[in-house]
Image (tube, rainbow, N blue to C red; front, side, top):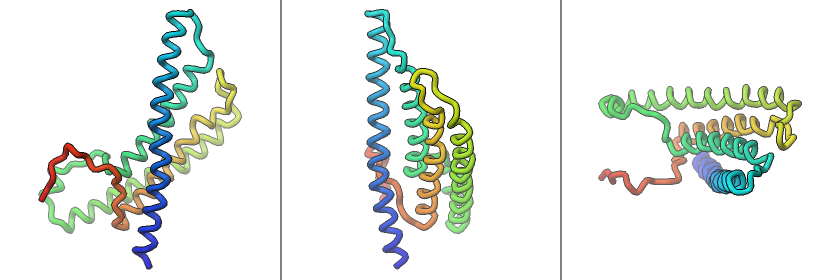
Length: 172
């Protein structure tokens, strides 16, 4: 029952991941287009769309925070493998739980304080678009939630890595 539930959670997380990655890739593409158009219109027509810098900044912030969550999912965070490889397996397992617990606390921090900051900034507006500033900050608790889910899955033994790097050596 437990492993079936974990497989279901992993499948759901992977479906969400596909949407998150599609959004992140779209954000980078849209940033590139907006900045290119902004440079062309500024240099050629001496005109700039009033919203272009603000939207680009918003997309950059969202892309960056989503990248943090994806990095945790892919286990791309900093690690000291040279030391860990020399430790006994039992100690490595204990360290994995300590690191996972610290990661879970970081995700919880983003959820709690990211939400508080988002609510705090809701009454302020962004200058060009007149959107609430909370639009810029809501990604913090979303990222925290994603980090917590990935960490819980990893601590439960579920492999969350979606992209295996082709340029890494295959260990046999």
